[in-house]
Image (cartoon, rainbow, N blue to C red; front, side):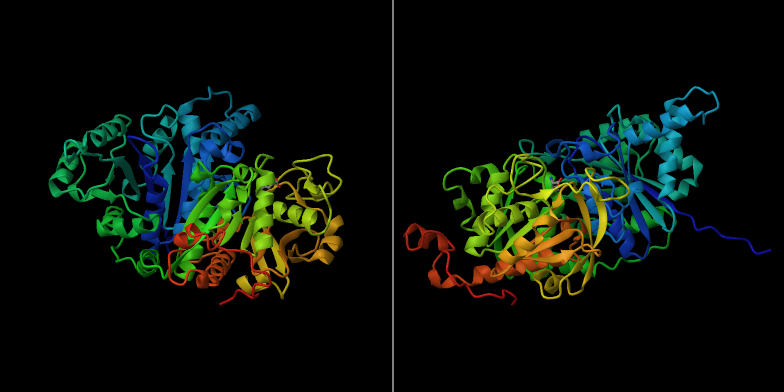
Length: 574
Ligand code: GLN
């Protein structure tokens, strides 16, 4: 009889110690990429120990960006790294929080699923965690599972216990524990210190997990003797002590870990054939980052600018747009509220492009609208995303279409023209209007548009996360005033992209294109925006005649870098 062979799925658990922000997400994503480049099919998942059922309601100041998956899950921003570094597509199942686990267990308990037994952390919570881990294994060779938080936190304990048990439920050879720790360099002593790593591994071993590989985050390359010392104290073989060096760009991490032999080490330990990963793409990306042909200055007008983590995917997508054009992108984070002050828009005068990203709430809205006006009137390339698109149409309605006091229902109930509003009859994702439109939705592009030029095809799909939509009542009026609705939902009911005529590049979308950008495949709109910014920058060198711009400005020869020139040539495509 022919025996059915089951492919054995391998599991790599990534934990972190000493302190947070060591780059566990990037490390997990890099492991994913290295394995993928070696020919394995992989997926990644994140287990988060907090009690929120998902991060959707968490303050971006505390938790950073809320990432959105195709299937509309509001997820941890690490899933963004996973998608940017690998070809794995993330779904709701790829991010599980303690809140979700407890919620599901309590629901089962209420339904009577546990047949009268006492419901406990072990085994009920840990079983539920393991069930979620197994759920993502279909169709892949390896699952890389990152545990949020730091070893030693009370809240991570059930997760660590679950992954400890996991090894005994599958073959031990199918499970690998990778632990990321810190090896600080102490300047006064002139040496690196291994004690924090020793303690962190001790903590892990106390709960029964012996790490197989240590990734040691450090600013100095670890010497053989330091590696030996760590190996001895932490009970790992010396080749498994990997220097995870600080690097300038996160996209160097896969290459830097590969240099340390990480990929071969993982494959060997998991009993898989050791193959040399094909890292050409990463080499190419890093070359473009290191040796750009030029630079552009982009202003990002937002609300959470003190915490760049809240715009993680956005800033990465801008970097990708730069990679796609062989340019370095210089970020100028502008607090929208500062633009509301007198001469506030001066802050935008040295920029080659203005971007207004997504956001929620009224604070800073008028500043964002001023940024739009500045970009529109001065013909500076403009890119509006979600709330940025709302601001773009409000600005246009107020100042071009003469709909004074036009606003969004999110900020005003008394405005006579609610250009942006809730669509009460709109059936979104099975819910009535007022709830968020979340996840991937199709959009059709108008052929003669900047959006079409960028994408190169008519049908696109992009991810959404918003409540408010363009109010169709104003479509004709705004179109007559010069707005082009260049992207619509297939039934034509929802406005997805707007552009304006007589402007080199003014595109605003209702969706979040940043979630679908990667260094390998920069998002078409980000790429086109950066290209437009470069063209814009190039069109003004004559003022300087080879002198530094700052000198020309200081000499008072121009009021600012880019004076408004009426009738600036159109068609910014190179
Ligand atoms: N606050 C706006 C809305 O809910 C925009 C959201 C966003 O930018 N993601 O519609």
